[in-house]
Image 1 (cartoon, chains in turn orange, purple):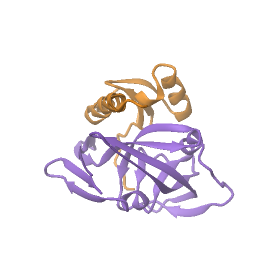
Image 2: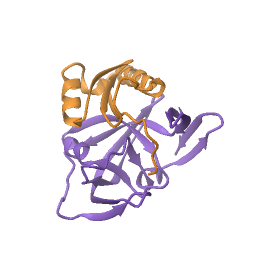
Image 3: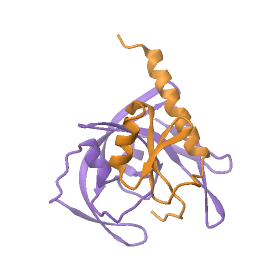
Length: 77
Length: 138
């Protein structure tokens, strides 16, 4: 039987990554780059989502990182 | 379910703006990916870039395309698919399927995954910009 506490711990790891995403201005990264975030750091980045995800998977389990894109320009969706 | 979030603050053209971005997971036949997505009442569907749809292994009919437009009036070629969306927050978990448009334009560089009407129709959304908070309620 799955341990419900385990899922909560995993969520906490992602929540930390999302907190980092909210606070970061990604000043060291280029507009439009994909970034993979684990806890409070970017573990891979680049123009190809596939490459960024593969590199991140080599470092931490897939459930432990999130991907986003760096935004530095205004959007009119 | 009532999930509360802080807006993402970013500086564009020297001005700080707030964006309603959430953390969610997208699930497809090839796996699951945790992503940031922006809530967008102006979009009709969830909009995914092609490379993400392919990574998730979503079923795509690239020959069956549909024309769309951005609000800037730029043409966008899309194809329809379905993606499973999962939100895990504060010990709550919700999962449902959403119709999505997959952008086939390699030049379309939307920064975030766009959660448009096909996502928003599942919720009531409260945007409180002065308090820098927004809520997703079901």
